[in-house]
Length: 314
Image (cartoon, rainbow, N blue to C red):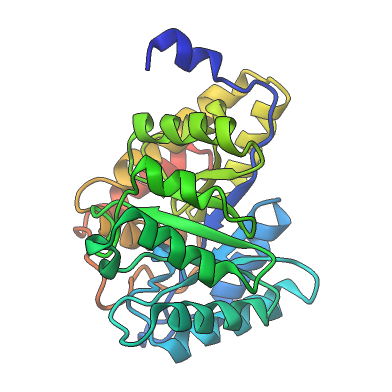
């Protein structure tokens, strides 16, 4: 894409739909920190972002089914009866018919008033494009609203970035309202946006590019693990962009600095960075991630403290 074409795509004065992939914190004894999690859910909702739970940031790949259901219950309780949320459907490693497995997970979410977002499975890696689209079509059939998810393998080995043929097919499924795109590639995401404009303008492209959070300038919405670090700063950034306030750029740069550090190699360890950051702010009881999550070095706290200072916390 030529630079002038990219610049023409900028959507000045648009307020994006923002979602934070909420972190699941832990107590000192290693148990899930219910109170801190529910406080984060409420804080995220109150500043104007939507909550996404049982995502990669919520260790969906490490939790048991019972633990994921518990997270759904806590989310529903924290938000009250009327507020919506998004939650991941994780089927990797499960045996059985995939349509049944996905619907079982989606039912648990829909019954609690949430919108399911479908994680990929390594089974897709050997499938033809039409097989993937057919599966989504069958899975989405009973629901009013479902989201898709394409995840680069730098995040998780079960992920994959779909071909244009698959994306075009997914846009033809009425109940599928959008897709989270996590390739960390601006070029790939711009192609998604151009295809969206051509095929289905109401279809949402939620950027998952924590290394390029200014994709909102080009028409992407977002569902970011980075937004879980400091949802109130993302909400303020979005407001500044929507009113064409130049203060947007400085705040966006500070958030991108946090993203570049938090999402450095090894990328899955960003969840530990998030826990360190949240603990620095006094929002969670410990900086420990899930016991199976890759860890950052002991000096991570100094890096995250610098990021917090730049964002005005200290």
